[in-house]
Length: 153
Length: 83
Image (cartoon, rainbow over all chains, first blue to last red; front, side):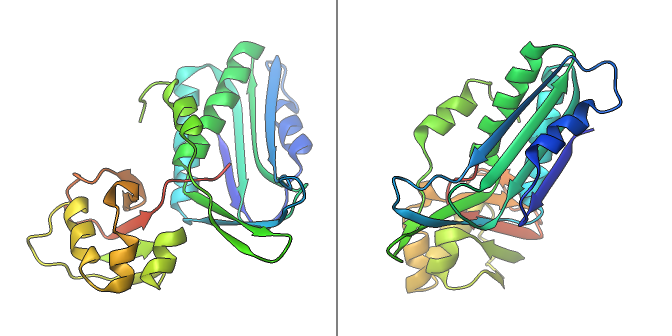
């Protein structure tokens, strides 16, 4: 049921969210989240996102299956980009459709928490002054956010 | 067995992938990390702190104590920072 895509190109987050409800009469709520590249106060020129092809899609699909097992969802879409992404551009999108808003909000949040800690993507920053920074460090706060959903998987 | 490396593990090792033929005494992911660390300077740097290395067997996350058990592809990478 879930749609998972890993791609270099940008995506239309609004269209992805709308597609989940299109032509249906049972959807009562669609929640979508879009993560953007920010410029870190003007210091960041571009982000470089590396991924593990095959495993990235598999982990995103697994997170979607876990959300579907936990809540009665009608549709799930997760999209993550790789390659060079400039400030202001979209990086990631999750959209969830359900009969009621509670499960749609919760599932979207769980999907993002799982995606950040389990999907094999790594980012590093190329600064506005041309210096390539080291690879981003994983944040303990992301692990804590994922852990509150339990040790599923 | 095919090994694939990502992010700073790839950069330190100096290659994205390679074929490995570890000795039969290497039976777990952790054994393989220790064996790789002894293969030269780049490997030693990449695997100097095993606790910072994440692994996957055939594209599924694997703990260091996991048996290699005939896996076709092993991957080593730092903790994920996507999203």
